[in-house]
Image (cartoon, rainbow, N blue to C red):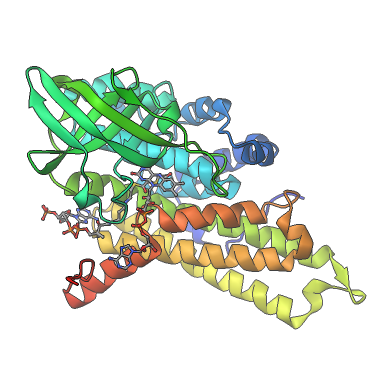
Length: 391
Ligand code: TGC
Ligand code: FAD
């Protein structure tokens, strides 16, 4: 049965004509190309290559980067809408788009030289050049400031040593934005997949985001020439500038997962007969559906308002923390309740529910865990940071 996107408060009526056209194009593509193939990709744990070309053709990779670099130069609200429609298909698909646009193209656009921008951005917009973002390390996840990956200045460039972990697209990427400490300060480098001493083995065995490649990055005496150093990024503010944008995309994207779960649960509950009636006739099921609708509606308003604030450049990072944390949290709750409404069928790949639920467990953790965003908000409220404790 065709997908019906829940929009109880008609939030999409506030979108521009251009944003609506984009929504419909991506929604149709997800229906046509993603939904029929996603369960196979998820079960067999791969990201279909042809999707990359299609994403490039639709102009959604790095779509907020200006047109002079071969990108679409669209609004952040439009980017949010795209994330929502992609994640309705699968979180791994939105992840691909987030990593390419917010985490790989944004740092080049914001911190790179003109030469670097012209060299990489047009090919990244079409998907011919794939990027990844290496911040997390085996011993430094929530606390990236402690990273031990090191850069050393040498004649004509830098030597990088260290290891990154949990890096989306690492194995398939042509370039990696690697964050490393140079004289104790975090700096950004563009590592090429063919650089000697660099490898990106895939991390297998995920029960979540299976249609997304996750990798280690190993750097052993990797020489990165001066022209692949990002001069504009100094300190943690560099990677965090990228994370703000990717977290923003998740605030929208997670609503897409929630809408998919709601749609499936509504249809299933109207069709499934128990005790001679559709289960949708029972008050407990009705309450669950009403709660889903309530939370999705609030999340949609939050994402839309945030989108316009970002477009007006009138925002601060804690707004994004709140929206990422809230919308992933409600999406995960909704996925769990939708799974419950589907009974035993809910654990199979006949329905999208368990896949969304499992994906959202990663989404809750990456880009700052749920609790880290709570602590970021609490620091904003109290002025006291509680990340570190002296024991
Ligand atoms: P803290 O003292 O808070 O800040 C250090 C410097 O960074 C600046 N800063 C920010 N700048 C811009 N935007 C933000 N959101 C910023 N947050 C902090 C800050 O102003 C300061 O600048 P300066 O100039 O004064 O030095 O740093 P801290 O070490 O105490 O950090 C605390 C904490 C917990 C908030 C932070 O480390 C954190 O957010 N941790 C979570 C780590 C995280 O999100 N990792 C994500 C890895 S990438 C990923 O998951 C990709 S998933 C991809 C996919 O979609 O598949
Ligand atoms: P930890 O930091 O060890 O946290 C473990 C638990 O402790 C969490 O519950 C956390 O909330 C809690 N905790 C930590 N510190 C505190 C504190 N001070 N107070 C209270 N509680 C605390 N990273 C990248 O750089 N690039 C990528 O492309 C990328 N892609 C990813 C893809 C997937 C599928 C996954 C799962 C992760 C990815 N990550 C990526 C890594 C992700 O950002 C980290 O997993 C995340 O930041 C959390 O780090 P950690 O897993 O080391 O958990």
